[in-house]
Image 1 (cartoon, rainbow, N blue to C red):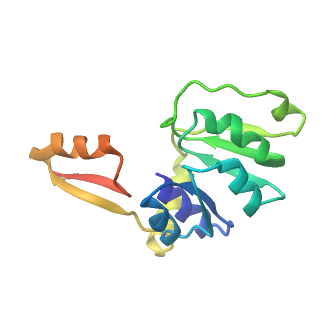
Image 2 (cartoon, rainbow, N blue to C red; image 1 turned 135 degrees about the vertical axis):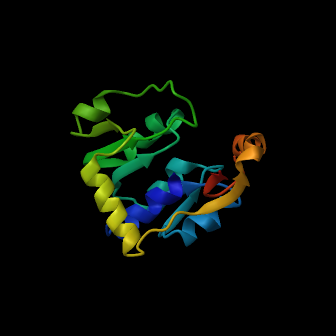
Length: 161
């Protein structure tokens, strides 16, 4: 999902600063990120070094501690969008960060039909392309699930009927 977010944001004209780790950093940069910070190091410090004025939007598929650490990185009026909880589904943060800075915390599980049409238009024009890490025949669904659980892949794992 993170690679798709990078591609979509880049196609929409955003300057993209991504957070990734290990071997995935090069793939995230190849997907179009202008800068990539390493999740294994001081994320907040790295983001502040790359974007000292702050960020306008955070697109977060990790949640967990990243919400509390990331909200102060938003510029006034910024938005933090959570679309996953790989880092944990229980979060805590100082609510003053929202109302004193006119920030928004948004949850997103799916888009509207109109947004989906915009996404398909980007794909038709070749501005975004899904990244497939591996394909498995349906009879190997258990193997695909095991690969998914290891979280070493970059891109989607596809089952072929």
